[in-house]
Image 1 (cartoon, rainbow, N blue to C red):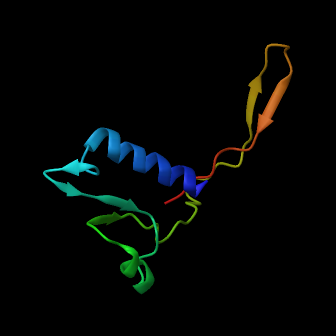
Image 2: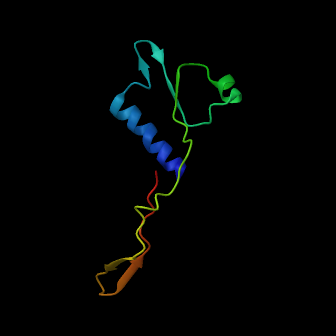
Length: 86
């Protein structure tokens, strides 16, 4: 799931901002890796690192009731509500 979020952010930056390609003769990279000494040794050009440091569930926004959906055949489908994260 986190990989999908990373890729969405990457595509948003590339498409909407247009700064992570060839801009004014400078190449930029996007990284989601932990910025440790090993990572620092691997980068070869200007890099925006968007490492996710912490992700915790927001219990205040959590809902316990299930989501019910009536389908076309008049049966009811129940699902757990989505988790909320900070």
